[in-house]
Every structure is written in structure tokens, then in C-alpha cells.
Amino acid sequence: MADLADGESCEIKGSGAKPYTLKNTGGVYSCSCPAWRNQSVAIESRTCKHLRKLRGDAAETQRIGSALPTQPKQSKSDKDLPPLLLAHAWDNSADLSDWWISEKLDGVRAYWDGTGFLSRQGNRYHAPDWFIAGLPSEPLDGELWIDRGAFQRTVSIVRRQDKSDHWKTIRFVVFDAPGKKDPFEERLAFLAETITSANHPYASVLEQERCQGEAHLRKKLLAVETLGGEGLMLRQPASHYEVGRSMTLLKVKTFHDAEAVVIDHSAGKGKHKGRLGALVVQLADGTEFNVGTGFSDALRNQPPSIGSTITFRYQELTDAGVPRFPSFVRIANAVIGNPQPTKTKATKVKSPVVRSVKKSPSTCEYYEYSDGKSEKFWEITRDGLDVTVRYGRIGADGQSKTKTFADQTAADKHATKLISEKTGKGYAIVKNK
Image (cartoon, rainbow, N blue to C red):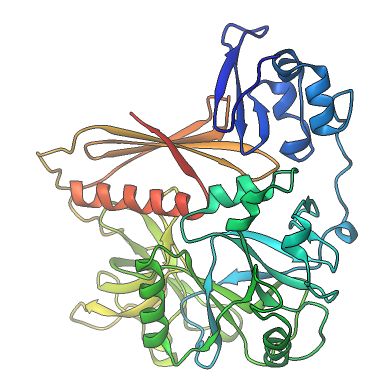
């Protein structure tokens, strides 16, 4: 029977007008047909009549261990999932001095339960015996990692079921001991004593250092991202391991500073009742959003005037171009006169739109991503001042959004940011148009 070598693909005629695409990626076979895509099992355990037609029933039976297509599994309950600590994103305002800093690795999260590795969804990774030899019976929380920018290669290896020598490129980078009830510093000491290069050639403990303030945090983040890293993780001193999302673990990505015009004041609630709750601001391209953190008590009592320009700090843009986690930094251009009090609605201050005559040539980039439960695509087209994104499940038409900018610099900056955001999440470019 015919077969596909690692990295190869082919097309096979189906019931529709368009043929289906069959692929072999690191030993994981896939098909673009709905029957393969809609199976609610790990992608390495899926099959379909097109794969069986290409490879033969015997080869597929040997690969997935069943003579029939695998039946969808019931959704895992919380008790079936590994008890992992999950992070919140930093809001740019909380003081992180004395917190523990480590690099945010772009690998595959793995929970060592004492006998093997589990994914966040509770699926088993089939690591070779020589890879796990000597690891303790104590649960460990870490990342299966190759290098910065090698996320897709890491995924393709750890999802294989053949326990191949490809695992020799993988490292298990440990950052916590979930079974210990001790404060974080004592858990770090346990890891340092337990995980050594002599005992575990494929395991190591993630480096941690104390944060000395925002300037140190920004310098560290710049150094990591310059080397192609994804960002930073910060852990609260003396904190305990909690299951689920916790404010004791924060993720930090690139800082950006920008300016916006104040168009309204939003009244505060709770402890801020009777004073400023948030500034309603507008970017030069017309995008509106709220800035609600970073203010001193004095500024909340006497906020920047409507019409003034502020500098704010944020981490990234959403697909709609809205800054995430914006935080007030300073008044960039104060308006002369008495600050206006909080009110229901103010006349919006629109910056003039000046369109650049010179346009960049039209380009289109196409990306794909697989997380073990679904396969998605993301496409970005740059046509002068227009930036269009199209996204959805592979094989579907998807949805599209277009955003027009005031000048070429703003359009290019927005597109670059979106691409950085997607590749940081594991999307890999497939082709350029």
C-alpha cells in the first residue's frame, strides 16, 4: 500500500467537489475531511476511510490500535485533568518587586504524575523509557521544550506514539513541585536537590531570579524577547501551589507605550465611588477603550481633562486593534483650564485622518495551528492602509475582519503586532502569497 513519509501530503477524491488533503506530520496522520476533523479524540488517535484507503486497514489498525474508527470519548471531568496552577495576565499596575522572575517557555506544558507525562487535557505523552529514567515519584510541573521558536517541532515530537529517538532533542524543564505543601522557595530548594544533570540528563530546573522593580522587569523582558523568547512568568514570594488560575502566578509580555485623547470620564464604583473610575480614550484611528488602572488617588480626585492627551502602557493588541491591559502612565498634553468632572457623555474628539499617498505592496500570509483538539488557520492580508485577517477551522471559509488605518506606519505596526501575537501562540506560517 502507498504511504506518506514524514512531512509529505497528498490529495484524495472524496464525495465533494474538492479533494481531501492527507498529511503525515511527525508520525501523526491527518485528513481534511469532516469525519476526521469532528472526532473528539486526540489527533494521533483519529482515522477515516480516506486514510484507510491510502494506507490500508492493517496499517491503520496497527497505528491506532483499533480495527474501526475510534469512537469519540466522553469529555474529561475535572478529576481526570492534572491539577495544574494556571496564570493570569499582569495588569501593568501591580507592583511585582521581590517576585520571582522566570522565562515563559514556548514549549508543551507537561505534568509528571510519577509514572508518565500528562497534557493539560489529561492526555498521555509517550516518552521513551530512557527519557523518564530516574525522575522522582513526586509530581512535577514543567515544560517539554526544545528551544525558543521551536514550538511546532516540539508538538510534533511529543505527540508521537513510537517513543522514538526524536525525544533526544527534548528537555523537561521543571518549574514547580505540585505535591509539596511548602512555600514556593522551599519547593525550589527541593527541585534543586532532586533534579540534577547527573541524575537526569534530559531534565533541568527553570532558572528563577528576584524582581528588583519595573525597570528590572522591563530590562529582563527585552533581553528574553530579543533572543526570541515569548515573555516572562512571575511568581509571588512564599506562595503555595493552587489548582486553577491564581493571581500568585502572572504572565508578562511586551510593553508598549502609546498616546490617546481623553474623550470622557467614567464614574468610579466601590472604593472609587464619587471620583474617577476610568478614562474613556480614543486612538488616532478612532478606536475607543477604557483606561482604569495606574492612577494615584490625587489623579482620581482630579483626573486629566477631556481633550487632553495621555500616555498609556499596554501589552498587546486584540484582533480588533484594542490595547489589552492598558495602564495610565502620565499626562502627555494637558489642556489649559479646570478639569471637567465626571459626566454622562462628552463630545468625542476625533483626530484628523490623513491617508498616505504611498502604499506598501499587497501581501498575504497564511498560518496554521493544531492544539490536539482542533486545527485552525489564520491569514493576514496587507493592502496599503487596509489590514484584513481571516480565521477559522482548517477546511472552512472562516470569518474575516478588515481595519483601515490613517497612515502606512500604523497599518504596518498593527500587522506586525498581530503576526507576533499569533506566532507566540504557536501558529506556524505555511505559505506566502
